[in-house]
Amino acid sequence: MAIWFKLVFMAVEAVYSISDLAGEFGVTTRTIRFYEEKGLLSPERRGMHRVYSPRDRVRLELILRGKRVGLTLEESREIIDMYKPGGNNARQYHALLDKVDEKQAALERQMDDIRELMEGLQEIRKRCETALGELNGTTFSSRSKT
Amino acid sequence: MAIWFKLVFMAVEAVYSISDLAGEFGVTTRTIRFYEEKGLLSPERRGMHRVYSPRDRVRLELILRGKRVGLTLEESREIIDMYKPGGNNARQYHALLDKVDEKQAALERQMDDIRELMEGLQEIRKRCETALGELNGTTFSSRSKT
DNA sequence: TATAACGTTGACGTTAACGTAAGCCACGGC
DNA sequence: GCCGTGGCTTACGTTAACGTCAACGTTATA
Image (cartoon, rainbow over all chains, first blue to last red):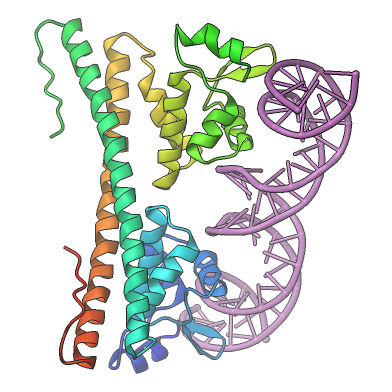
């Protein structure tokens, strides 16, 4: 990104080049362009170059967070779309609230699943530790997790 | 699954046909065979038919739980593999404990991500509700979550 | 005994989420 | 004036996780 260009914008609002964001979040530029292709991002254009705003940056963050918890891009998009105001009448707000309910419920189910997986792992941990304890009578290794 | 066959086994241990499990967990038989193909399941065979034990059932449950939280089949397999005892010396136990640590850490990161997504949704909910409150001065809708 | 219902093994098709490569601007430094 | 560094588009390749036949054997039931 040309320096003169950053300077022009700096006073107003931070901007990022595609490789800025790619570097910061550890993804490739291809990935970011792909998200745009899928309609999850829509940065400004200055000439033919993409220019990302802090809002774009936040969106990318949301997408990647969604990915980490196993959401599809489509699901992440749905969540992102909830952030932009959209409708201004009561019906729209209620519709949005319903969607929020739905997503929160889904996320809670996921947390339950994770908790159960954790319990299983905790079981394994216990078994390991007792087995190790029996292997050497004096227990000098102090592993534990909560 | 032939009835005589179930009867023979019932006294010993429950068994399930592939469609039993498919029906119970809401997946297709193809899916279950695919998991076997990938080495995540290995049911017995009676003739050419697959016969699933309760242990197989639990494994399938684990796989599907993994899926719901966004794990790949490979990651689910790793977790499943931790359940079967395997090694019996101290080194092996410590190696297993390390893996457990790793998986637990990953799951905790995921829970953090989910929590942050939830916070975002909660924000949206609040905005919606105040907006609705301003739309009709008397607030007769009592939506709230936690 | 026929016929539906269930099971088996291939084999190819499909979708999401990118990777990879080619070919082409445009700017900035030497 | 040239070349390296990014960026852009277009297009084809790839992997995971199944779906979807086809062609066939087996079992239950009318």
